[in-house]
Length: 225
Image (tube, rainbow, N blue to C red):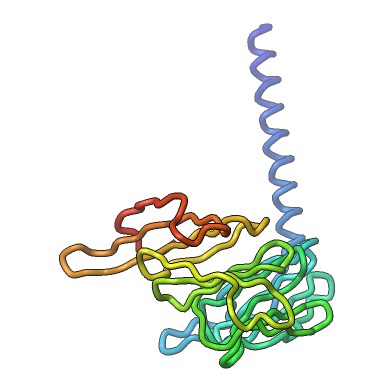
């Protein structure tokens, strides 16, 4: 009899726990909401206002997104209103620093940093770039055009040219990132050759030494990073 009571007690506790979990899950679902309007999927073309890249702001009250058409928008979670911030030409260049609420973007033929708080822009350089990254305080940046080099910038009023240029082993096609403290750079590089397939390596650089990377990671046949 004691064993049966013990088993019944455990079963009742398990059922109660399941009910509580389901209630908590339902509450979390009720707090979720949708930004924008629902759209039917299209196979013949990409809808321009579907988000391609997204990032939360510092206190997670807003969502910054790049849409398929290249428009940069900001969604406010409280008001659920959409605010247009700018437009990106290069599809891959979307770099957001939530510490400073600044966005590194490609606009026509120049690369600028857009301050999402006051709307001011700081031009970094001219030209078309594929990949880039910012330090946490947005005072340093790295940029690549997809070839065998990348530039290192200090963001000032006169920063049209990089303070350093690094030569890489393979073209920087799969990614480029700068550490938050601005001391290290990681480049994801790749090539494709018939008979060899895709070759991807990651090089880790110290910003104070542009002669050679401090480490090379051979990732093998990876299409992207």
